[in-house]
Amino acid sequence: MDFNFQTNIKKYAELAVKVGLNLQPGQKLIVQSLRNGGVPIQTAPFIRELVASAYQIGSPLVEVQWRDDDLILSRLKYAPKDSFGEYPTYLADGILEVIESGGAILTIAAIDPDLLAGQNPVVLDQMQRAYLDAWKPISAHIGKNAMNWSLLSIPVTGWAAKVFPDLPEGEQIPAFWDALFKICRVYEEDPIAAWESHLKNLQKRSDYLNQKAYRELHYRAPGTDLKLTLPEDHIWRSAGFKTQSGLPFTANIPTEEVFTLPDRRFTEGTVRSTRPLVYTGNVIDKFTLTFKEGKVVDFSAEQGENFLESLITTDEGAGMLGEVALVPNSSPISQSGLLFYNTLLDENASCHLALGSAYRFSLAGGENMTGETFKELGGNNSLVHSDFMIGSGELDIDGVLRGGEVEPLFRSGEWAF
Image 1: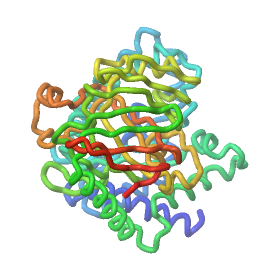
Image 2 (image 1 turned 180 degrees about the horizontal axis):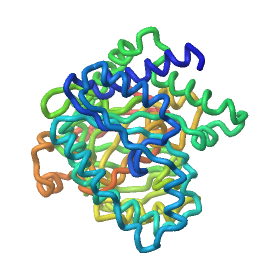
Image 3 (image 1 turned 30 degrees about the vertical axis):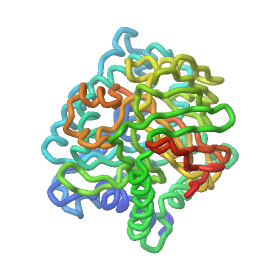
């Protein structure tokens, strides 16, 4: 293996452990992958570096949940069709045990976006619901920042082929790694210092928005005319979080966003996506959502409309908004010109919204509220939280102050202040 590549792999692993998780001596760590049963076995070379870094910091136990995509496909092909409502709950129970004993969780995004293309959507929906039900207690802990957690991407063959279809097969994975190293600041002389500076800049943006305390946001772009109401005690956040015990960590690597929650009850208008959304391993693209009194009342998609419907109808809160996030069109991911077909990366190229649950820490005192109180104050409760991208170089956003004054927030996809 190329020496420089191996050096950068180690730096990327250290970023995940030291900046993403801020893993502490004595903390156990779970490494897993959302919805897909574990981390792909082809990522093992990187995972070994990551695990070594965690142990060097002082973790007493690092447990990696593995998966083989061929086994997922075998289940879909051969398993009884009435068995897909089952989920190995012992996996979720084990993760929950680590979390509740003070451990951390690192989620790896590494999947071919087309892996499940052509599979029975009813079966995929059953699998998704089974996973969401099993993970509900874990999701609740994440939503409250009960522990340090982070998300990180690693390329796999099918995904790299999707992102770099014009390159020879042998060049696709290296090209993907190169893109990740660039957008994650791994090529900086001191990546950790570079991240500290970047996080401070994002915090300045969120501080400014918290001082303004806008009552409403108005989005305008081709195909989009949408008004969002913000709860009175909303809090703008960046990905530089703190656990309930005060431990700082970075939820996403990379991250370019500042975000808060909208009041789920008062979204009005129409919004059009600007990048594909990958949901249950299937691509939903060129879609439009129309809201009235907070709820999706109409929708369409040129690709994956049945999966969009499945997402929206997961439960009562799935057809309402839980997050509003602001990202300038000049972000490194946007300027790379790449479409990653992965929410963790693509959301940091574009302003985005999320259908489904809101993060409790986006509302003052939300971490300590009951679900019902959170809902009464405008928060959204749902099994799902699915970000979709709406930003572009044509997006304008106005902020409406409590007194009714209107101020430019975004112009032509860039911050207006």
